[in-house]
Amino acid sequence: MNRRAFLASLGAAGLAYAGYRLWPDQGIINPCISGLPDTLAQHPLMQQIWEGIDPEQVWDSHVHIVGTGDSDSGIWFNPNMDSWLHPSLKIQKKFYENGACAEPSEIDHSTISRMLTLSKEMPTGYKSLLFAFDWFHDEQGIARKENSIFHIPNQYAAEIAIAHSQYFEWVASIHPYRKDAVDALVEAHARGARAVKWLPPGMGIDPASPKCDAFYRKAADLNIPIITHTGKESAVQGGDQNHGNPLRLRRAFDHGVKVIMAHCASDGDDEDFDDGNKRISSLALFTRLMDTPDYEAFAYGEISALTLVNHAWAIKPILERTDWHHRLINGSDYPLPAIMPLINTRQLYQMGLLESEHLPFLQALKTYNPLMFDFAVKRLLQFNGNHFSQQVFETRRFFERNLVA
Ligand SMILES: [Zn+2]
Image 1 (cartoon, helix red, strand yellow):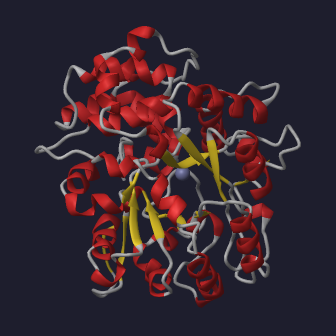
Image 2: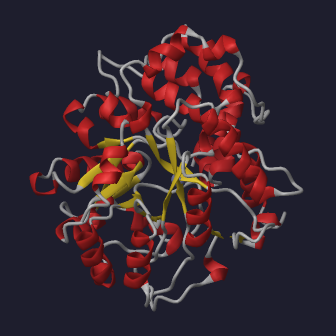
């Protein structure tokens, strides 16, 4: 294992450190500055990134709530994340808190107020889909706190979204093995959840298990999409990485469920069940699903984290598939874009995906508003004349349509 692979094995903290060592000028600590200066707000590139886009249609489909439960939110973090016995977990938590601009005295509230500040600087109509996050559950469908890394209750995500409905929508998280999974799905749908979020390796979900069938039937019935992690998982450690294999989602597609495959499986490799379980890139397996004619109406790719240092290699092959663009959905994976070393505009420039004149604008924007920064990077990416079309960002229609059964 080389040094970079070793650091990557430490998760987001290791990646941040690797990114910092390679490009120290990109900074390591989010300075958490507020108030976009006119030089950025009026910048010609600012006009360029919003040109032809209807902000009322721009919903960021992948946004994490960061907190520790120091309010009555019900948020829970594994205590290992606060222990130097688990240094990579502890450092990782620090990076998340810094990215989200958490104030130590009131972490839950300060991270939400930071998101509100950032959202208010976005053009009117722009919204973020806030994720709840369910417990790890065992094979019997029992919640296992000790195996969970964190927990964000559905109730809390819903409350925040309802309290600030001009900026937020919410996404429920429901483990499909739960005894009450179907009832919880019906309830979340009735309360306006726009989708369901799964992190199969971190939550103990095998999407190919028959134990998901009742959940799939109800999700198809309600026409509510599942946003699920695909490919290698670095941000949340533990669990069975095989559960992120995109091919395991065939079971959901066969039930007629719309699935948004987060990150387009752009990191890691997985077993190819169609070819003697040979390991090939997870992206190649994602590609096979996207290219399966029967799945055309169900398989969607989501481009959050694609610009991260360990995913960026996948940008070109995805940009070139313009025939997929109507099935690609933008998400930021906030607070990841706010963790300074994780997205590196210089790397993207060196790959021929950004122009040199984009860099000072993007670098400045990153310190003020990571949501705007993430949007700007993806709008400016270009290769061989291909860029992410406006429909990749105007995702509201997709989520609204899915509320109508
Ligand atoms: Zn995420």
